[in-house]
Length: 112
Length: 114
Image (cartoon, rainbow over all chains, first blue to last red; front, side, top):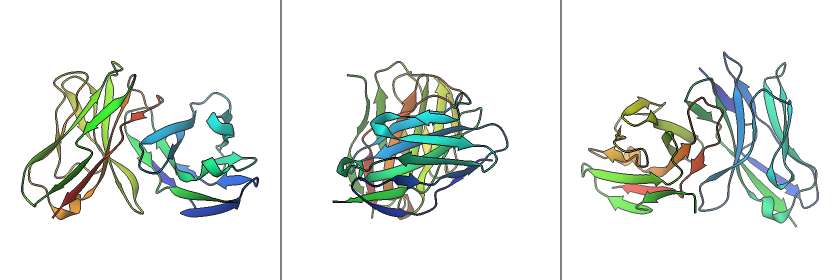
């Protein structure tokens, strides 16, 4: 079975500072990994995904994530936070099948 | 516009009164899924469907039913709702099965069971 752990349910950064949201996964098979963003009162929207091609994955809005198999991690980063990045972020894992497992989410606050 | 729609968006009901939340997608997607989102628990998968007439349980299927009679629709049925099913529900769809496809999410249905 797969699982996802997101360290830090709330993260605050200053505008212009580095954003780092942590995600660790467990999977018995090579996983597919995703980061989704949820803005207030909206559904989830895909930021980026890892599907066993390049280990450094670039997504929308300047976000990227690096797949590290040895650390079973898929941390999300953005060099410079913007006010519009304030949202809830979810890491998710899927195996070769059709079940998806989401983390508990990290709420990002950007301080002006 | 390509989208996943859910109805109703908000629903307050009482224990035991059967209800259906509809989900429809206009992208000809094979795969559809239902999730519930609860504070501190993230999203948990309830049921998913790989194609018409093919459905399977996710992580938290108890108390829910689904059907997939048409490709575009995937309703979620609560035959006898209970207060512990008060939650925010999301429907999602993706092009095909295999676990690597992007899921497109609906806007959510906020359900309160009194």
